[in-house]
Amino acid sequence: MARLTTRAFVGRLAGTPIFDPNGDQLGRIRDVIVVLRRDRTAPRVHGMVVEVPPHRRIFLPMTRITGLEAGNVVATGLVNMRRFEPRPSESLIVAELLDRKLTITASGDQVSLVDVGIEQTRQLDWVITKLFVRKGGSGFRRRGETLMVNWDEISGLSDEMPDQPADSLLEKLDDMRAADIASVLTDLPYKRQLEVTQGMDDDVLADVLEELPDSAQVAILAMLDDERAADILDEMDPGDAADLLGELTPQRAEELLGLLEPDDADDLRRLLTYDGKSAGGIMTTEPVILAPDATVAEALARIRNEDLPTSLAAQVYVARPPQETPTGRFLGVVHFQRLLREQPGTLVSSLVDSDLESVDPQAPLDEVVRHFARYNLVGLPVIDNNDHLLGVVTVDDVVDNMLPEDWRESHSAATDTELITNRKAGEDDGN
Image 1 (tube, helix red, strand yellow):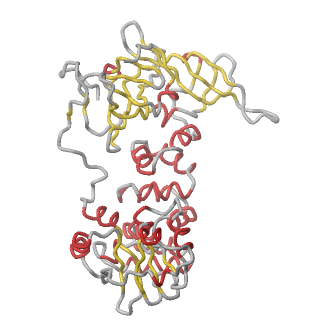
Image 2 (cartoon, rainbow, N blue to C red):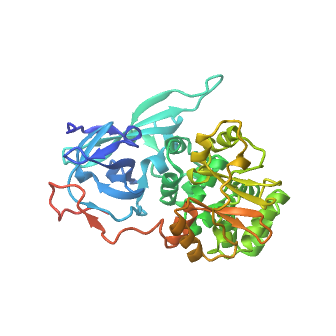
């Protein structure tokens, strides 16, 4: 068990595992919740945002913390498993406060907030006591001087700031998966969402959008200027991009399509013609497609691409030119296990499984699901009447579309789960 520590820096706690008294990991700390006041009372820490499986962010009161130090946090008691939703009076230190521009009251120096020190009082409350700040760089210095100040030596902490960079938060998000970043993003107020999305690389934001509910996708896309919105759509999986366009007004969708390359725009327009719950509506249009004279070595090189989803790397699709959907005549599939057993110079055309089932793009979802269940598939080719490959439905596509539309936001029926013991059940959560 961790010894009780009465001081900590929030930046070092973010990402730290949290354990029960028996040493079992419950989740990871993602942020710390504080109430900022305009009087001279030290800002009080309410609790922590903890991510528990599967990707659920919950509130953990500071009264549950029995051991706290960087790398090892121990909690006890009953934890409310309802999804964390910040109150208007609360602020998230990592997500909202880091990088905030502040003023040292005595000197008038402008500084940015790098980290926040919290401390436990004699009354066992946790409050902000120290701020680690950085002055602006000058001359050839890329970064300015850093210093530690008391929280009451600073002004601007409780004020609404018109502009705020998101460097520190983006650094925290850098090693997180897209689904986890999406969870963080939905918890932020509108202004902070805007600042964070502006700082994200296009490919990262595209992956994050694919993990968000439709309403959140539309809201975030509306934050972007037209050129960047089109760039994000271009980075997204075509099926997901088409779904997002389908949530927009026809006029807005056509405006964004007009900013894409003509071939890319035509592909998306074609996807928009299919029913959303048909094979054509859920398929992926960018599987690994090879010509008949491609070799095993070429096929393995293509599926080694680390950016390729596992479900698409499981097999390659062989077709006559062109090798972009819709292809020339579709010949069949080669499974990656077969590729691993053959010589590098072997032609994929000699390894084709031509017996794999395929479906028409108008096939309804229940028919697609039956194919997957009957033949234990990871991917199902979608073929038109002229044997052209239009796309592939993957097992990921099937699972996404079998779940209810709000599955990313829904949670189990139990709102209070006894994750940790040894604390009275009736204690107030504080959220």
